[in-house]
Length: 382
Image 1 (spheres, rainbow, N blue to C red):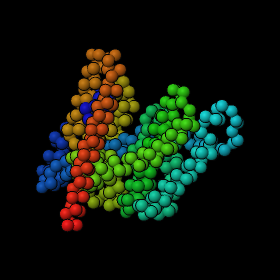
Image 2 (image 1 turned 90 degrees about the vertical axis):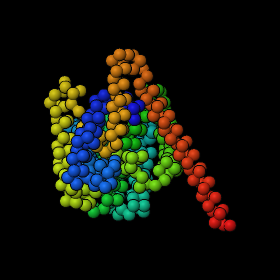
Image 3 (image 1 turned 45 degrees about the vertical axis):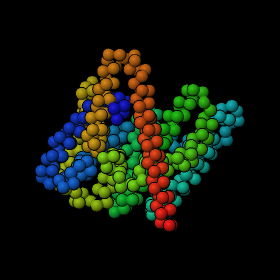
Image 4 (image 1 turned 30 degrees about the vertical axis):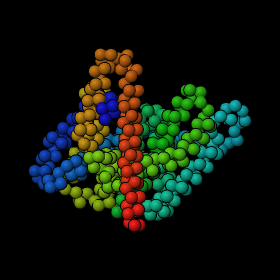
């Protein structure tokens, strides 16, 4: 988390510390006093079950508001849709031999769309027509996300997913599974679209062949699935651990909170949580407005995403990220050349190193679990 703080920068770092102090130092103790937080189960999970509503509200309204401000980008994205489906005969030559044919895109979009609809239906009991709506909506939102990434280098993944959640909150108001899974399709497609565009642009700058990159990325889908799914179950054998101190899963907390709100209704929440949604929603809009009015003073205005995120993760994570951001800031001021050259690579290495060690530890635990399982089977057979 210290390394992550060095990467995200000073503004988000101090915003997260500020939000963490407000949430865990002032709001949570007050909510325990009035009974909004169950004191008998006091801990991270109990606190975040209350604070998630305000934090999620800040992030959702901020993301949607900033997305709405990109109206020109959205219009330009939709104007380019017709060019995607114009399957004109492509002239043979060097360029056509290294570019990705349009038919690959159209055919791939159709097949992958059918695949998503089938998974939604058979794995999550989403009706066929809802699956079709989710895929069609995802197609348009992914185009907008791609355009936003290309123009600003910012991908509004959260906002894209929340739009789908809001749509299915109306279509299927009591179905949390449908709400979450359809939104996951949108957010996944929007994120993948932006990531692949960045990869293709990097490859272009380095002289890589776009068609070969496309094929490599396509094969990566299957390789990634074969590795990621088992790795997840090794690391998190029990999904109920998500949202605990060990696996805070802040993004999952936000998605779940929105789904619960849309399915159960706002009346099911504690009055203070409802007030938190209202105040958080206003803060998520007010902060970007202040940044627009006072662009020269942006560095003194807290990050809405930083404030919101600090309310859905443990305080020590916010503190660690602040420490990392502070160290990076000092290096940038005292040793700018060294900071520019080493902060990102060093931080990335720290994150990767910890992740790899975590996998080795998990594999070691899994080996012991498998050994114990076989021993128990052997004893029971005797």
